Image (cartoon, rainbow, N blue to C red; front, side, top):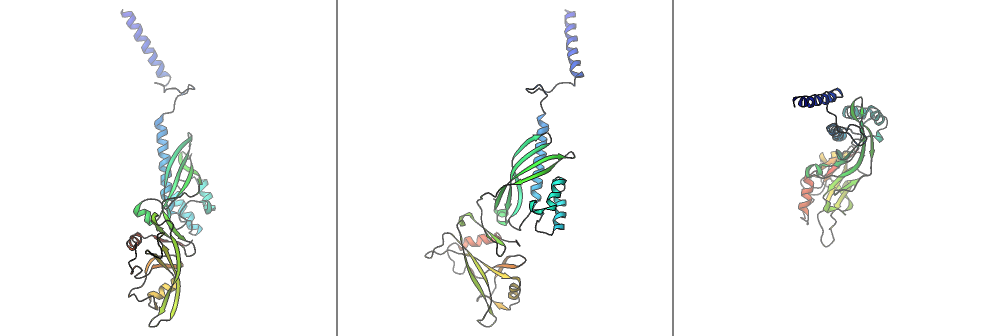
Length: 306
């Protein structure tokens, strides 16, 4: 009995030593007889890739592609240098039309929302997502002014994950309603209930001080609610457009607009124009004037120089 017990003990000890000699406890094998990858390592890689893409997305708004080339180059190196591969970064610096960043002041790229991460090899991943663009309205209320699909190639460069390729898709429809004026360079964000709005363009008139002589004129652009009718008019959103010279003259009281004791209030400006709200624009208290007041509280007008 003792000999049998001793024999079993020796056999067990031999198997144990054999396992240690061959690298200890073996990992489970796959269908081809090869050790399976440790899932923890793959999970860690995916988390690192996701963090890299999110970091890149948060920096897009910091790189203004409309700035002079030397400033764009410096900004890219500061914001993209640790997340974009040197070869792709050099390509963007040499041709900013292919680069990612902030094209206009509003809307701007706020983040990248990741939809899928696919492993291509031990050192390469493909990431699908969308760039979320917002204005001050979405910043206050949530949502997106625009969405654009993006596909990113991520690979290990000198033993660190970096973005090596980028491909953009076409913009997608969103719930946001935005009026964009290319002629004067501004956009105006509206609630989705204003979808189908119309634009009415007239003129504002500036009168000489102490007389009724018209000495200055300029565009008055009114955004009109889709439910506006002749029988049941609603409150428009009027936007006056001034050249910088006209606006400075108005502030210096070289002319006046209307009989109101106060002048128009500035909504925004770019390098060429000032956009303003007429004084007493809602004196008639038309239907919807409260909604217009709420819209204006969220700084919906964004000026740009494109």
